[in-house]
Picture (cartoon, rainbow, N blue to C red):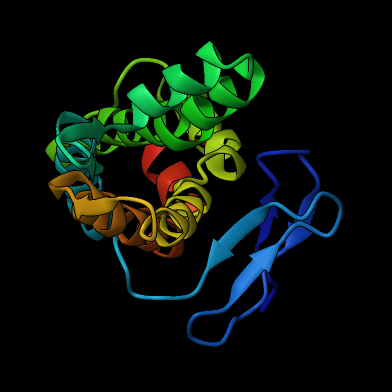
Length: 200
């Protein structure tokens, strides 16, 4: 019995497939891109997580992350208002990086996954689906909400001695969104998507 071959969707290197243990991941020998995974997680699970992620993203940006109260001065803070303050203080590059990694990249990834997976679930293929999935894979290293969340928690601890910190609804949504994005990364099997898209 001959092993099947698979082409890397990043660098086109042809490689033989090998049996993997449960939860194992096969990577390209040349560029390191994920070729396929062994597991029983399906695209339905990724789609459910994607829809949950979009709802959490709206909640995380519609409400304050936290509110600082000093005497009678009450100051709510959202992700975007924090980025605008950084820009006002001459740190426009850092503000742009925060928006890119904590809002733009995760939102674009969720929207593109929904654009791909909803049609696949209904039995058809969206236009430019293969190109959209390449963008999803390219966005993987840029979606770093967990770094922002960690920095926010550290800032809260430091500010707690100077002001009363009131945790907002968005902070909880943000925390769950980080878990949902991690779940999508762990569950998404690129080979299954390429197979469903008919790209060999």
